Length: 184
Image (cartoon, rainbow, N blue to C red):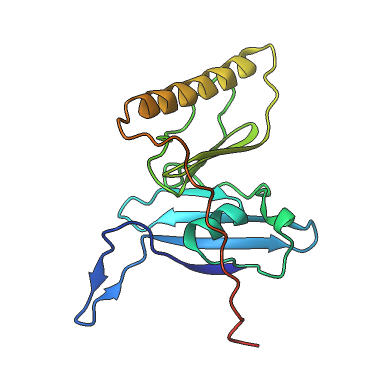
């Protein structure tokens, strides 16, 4: 397990006479050696924190540090199922049968994620990542999941269509740099 700060955005806060940077979020990357899975929690540093989960690869691309440089890249691409925390503190929650999707605004920040069934949706400032699986069953739960996905996609389309400076393509995520472990 690796815990650390994230410094995101153009206007980072500072404290004290030495202008120490205040992290915009806190991250906790997890590797389970028994299952071989990885995943990460990210919580914004705010009075009412917004928290979510993401893959370690997404975390590394976002904060610029790979918490597990010795692990193969393929292991870090998919987030393992992590224990859920209680609402309303965390923004990631599974959609209950017949229930609405939790609040996730597409392209609003780099720390929000939600789950619909076993499908994880991560919202970043430049992209939305979907991974996992979801069975849209022919029942009320399937209808609720379909509506939740449709609502999210409709909202993403509205945001994209309203952006007058929408680029032709977003550059791929920056690969994190591998640094020497200072404790070795």
